[in-house]
Length: 75
Image (cartoon, rainbow, N blue to C red; front, side, top):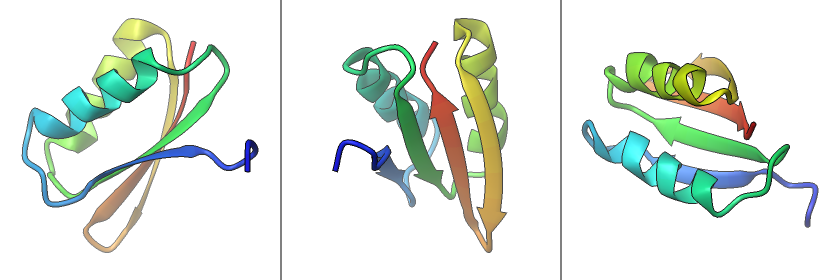
């Protein structure tokens, strides 16, 4: 199961909780590891990519209905 990405399910949580949960999980991961964050808070669309840019992580976002899926590769 090592090939499956780590997952943070932050659906239903309001800012800043999605970013805080993502940050805590990223701290525990090794560089190059993929983390998937699911979020429904509209502010996450701004906050998560901004956090990733500021910390050098790669971040891509897709959306399915209200759920945003951020795929992050730790720097």
